[in-house]
Length: 516
RNA sequence: GGCCCCUUCGUCUAGCGGUCUAGGACACCGCCCUUUCACGGCGGCGACACGGGUUCGAGUCCCGUAGGGGUCACCA
Image (cartoon, rainbow, N blue to C red; front, side, top):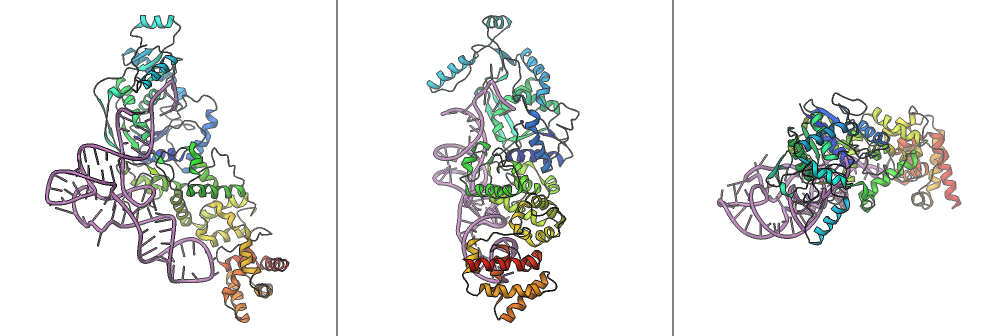
C-alpha cells in the first residue's frame, strides 16, 4: 500500500512548484489505491496558522487534489499538524539521547559564530568539533552551572558512506564525514524540522517520500535519524525543481521582480491584471502573480489545464502525447519517467494548454466558468442572460481563460469606446465609409428578423445593391458597432447586438466621424 | 569554497549502442484558409556543452573538463 504526503508550511500561499510536487505524490498514491496525506509543517510558525493555511487548502480543493488524511478531515494517524505532535518528537529526541545517537551541546550561538568565522578565515569550511558536547551528566551539570542551555545534536557517523537509492536519481553516495552534527532540538526543547519530519513520516506510514531535490542534501541526516530509531527507510524520489522562466535557478516567489523582466511572464501577469481590474479580483502582490495558484483560479484558468501543464514539467509519457485528463494522469504516471534536470516554467506553454483545455470543454461548462466573470464585470446580471451563451459560443477559442469574456464587453454594455487607430482607418479616412454605413443602417432598421443568417443576407444584399465588395464595408461596420478591429464573426456579432443597437452605434460612429 | 545533483532545438521533452541526414509539443517565421482576430492545414527555422576513451559503430557506455544548479540555520 503506497502512502505519500505533501507537507506545506502555513505560508499563506500555494506555490506552483509545490503544486507540482503535491501532484506527483497524489498521482502516485491514487494510481495504486493508496493514500495521499496532507501534513502541516508548522513547527516554527506559531501564530495565524489557520489563516495562513486556508489559501493552501483552498488551492488544493480548486485543483481537485484531495487528501485522504489531513486537516479538516482528520484520519487514523492524526493529528496532522506537527505543532500538535511535539510530544512525540520530544520522545524521539529523548530516545536518541539515551541511545547515544545524539548529545547535549552547550555551545553558545556566539561561540559557534566565532568558530564559523575563524574557519572561514582559514579558508576552511566550518565543521563543529563537539567542543561543547556534554559527554556525561556531570559535564552537563557543569555547563548548566555556568548558565548554559543545551541544544540536542545528532552524533553523526564520521566514517563510511550513506548510500541513498533514489527512485529518480539512482544511487547517491555521500560520505558520512561530510555531514555536520545537526541540531534536532532547540535550547527550549522544541524539536526541529528534520527530526519531526522523520518521526511523522514513520508514524503516518509514509512509504514514498517524493519531494523536490533541494531536500536531497538533507536526506543523509534524516536517514541517520530514522535508522537510529530503528525505523525502516521509505523509498525516496527527489524531483527536479521547477526553474524560473527563461532561467535555470529555482522558481521562487521572492524573485518576482526578476521574472517580470521575462516578457512571457510579464505578459501573463498583465493578462491577469487586465481581467482582475474589470472583475473585482483582489491583486495583492503576495498571491496575485503567476508563481501562486490563486492567480490562475482568479482569472479563470481550468484546474485540469494547470495540472496537465505541471505534469509535463519534469515528466513525460513518450515525448509525443501531451494531453491528459486527470484520470489518465493517474493511470499513466510513473516515477521512472520523471526527468532528472530542472524544467523551466514557460508561461506561453501553460497558456497553450489552457487554451486547448478550455476550447475542448462542453458549452455549458464554458458558460458556467465564464458567468462569474461576466457578472463581476457588470456585463450581465445573471448567467441566464441569453447574450452570454451566444457570445461564449460565438467567441469559441478566442476565450482562452474564463476572464477573457471582458474582451467582448461591447456585446453587453450600452456605450462603447472606439479604438482610435481602427476608427481612423476604417471610418474617418475612407471617404465613403459613412455613406455606406448609413445605407446599411437603413436596411437594418427595415429588417423583420435579425439573427445571424438574416444579418448576413442583409449585408450581402446591401453590398449587391450598392455595387461594392463586402470587404469595402464590413470592416467599417465592425469598428462602428464594436469599437475594435478584431473579434469573432461579424454576423454573429450583429445578431447578438440586435438591430436597435447596431443602428444606434452606426449612427453614433458616423456622427463622431463627422465631428472630427 | 565543501558536499551533492544536472547538461539533446529559445522552452518542455523523445531517445535506454546501429532504425538519428536526432522525433513531438510550445514559441517564432512563411504560405494557405478567411470580412478582422483566433482556430485549422501545410512548410520552415532550430539541439546531442567540450575533450578523451571503449566499440566495427556513441546522443546513447566510461573518464575528464567546462557550464548550470541545489545545499551548507537553535527555517521548513
